[in-house]
Length: 168
Image (cartoon, rainbow, N blue to C red; front, side):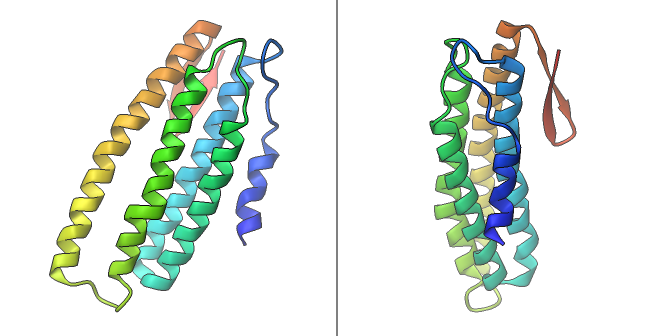
């Protein structure tokens, strides 16, 4: 199952980098990679109704997807000398890695013995609020970086629902 989730990462053609980089393709590639993390994290949220085992399975899948995304982004060269957008996406990936290995492990652990206690419910609320706040800050920084990248190369970024899309 994990291979099926990782296979689409290679379905999006890796863009050329350096002077041969096509900025729109480069941006779209980064969007596809980050969307994959979001889609996989949605599986964790869906698994919460099932308790510990499905949550842990979804979390471990997310850890693998994030690791794959980190490898893809880390090895991606510059785009005509530009690295700020890629570097900001890498910061987002690092945030997701910490979340998947840390806070989401804590959340799934609350369900290890079945029902969560009132103290665990309070802690879960605090964790999710903190993740939301920190995630918003990082995601907004990625959005600004992507918009700056797009502006530099003459295209715009639009938000089509949950997925960001780039247009000329």
